[in-house]
Amino acid sequence: MLKYTVKRLLVAIPTFFGITVLVYLISAMAPGSPLEMLMADPMATKEDMEALKAQMGLDDPAIVQYFRWLVSMLQGNLGVSYRNNLPVLEQVLEKLSPTLILTLTSTVLSILIAVPLGIMSAYKPYSVWDYASSGFAFVGASTPTFFTGLVMIYLFAVRFKILPMGGMYDAGVHTMASAIRHLILPSLVLTIFNIGSILRQTRGSMMEVFSEDYIRTARAKGLAEPRVVIVHGLRNALIPVVTVLSTMIPFMFGGAVVAEQVFSWPGLGSLMVQSINARDYPMIMGITVVIAAAVLVGNVLTDIAYSLLDPKIRESR
Image 1 (cartoon, rainbow, N blue to C red):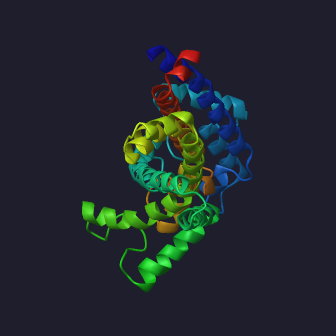
Image 2: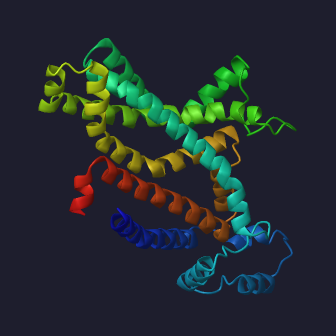
């Protein structure tokens, strides 16, 4: 197991650095300049602009700027923000917790809802239940996150006034109960969006497993139906489901960016949008490092889950 885990980590390292190169170069080639945002004084001269550009190191080629940033990053220094001159790492870590809370909550809810629905749909295929759950999953997966969020706000915050419209806490009330109330709507929106893929994959995998000989043998032995479904069926159907979860990790963070904007959730998504608008390259790269690391760690954990569910995968690699 240790050898297998080390191999997966070694594969993730060049992927991580490749992501940072692409994001830095794309940011550098984007229209606009952080100098335009920083030099708010209309009386600033061209000489002032050039002096500030040299001071910030923006007069060097993009590749030189990247390697300078890379050396600092490897030393644990992500630089300071162009917007507020505060350390990037401190600001990113401050915003990381809300994003992880939102993402993990929606992921757990998606699994707890989609997997049982997929099992029941596979157990009674082409029934009214199957069509209803599949239709719900299709609508949820095909509806844009921002639209679902606006509908939720209208229904539960504006119309019925039972949940807050946005933010993470009530004004002046930083309690767990207040955070949970504010978490319900954004996590529900992401859950609805994520359910579709997990449900469809669970249903397809379980239907394939139910046709196997060992399932018929287990039933012929007189084993209880819940034991046949859960113990003999679900475990063998989980590998494709885990595959879907691994491919969904980047989209979960992407969906969180949209949900944070709609619900004013103070996470990395909101900070990323503000940084892109201000061409705040150090902050953009800092957020990229954190999200890329989280996605790659999630993929490594998925590979480890593969090997636990099916030892043949570990032995073949």
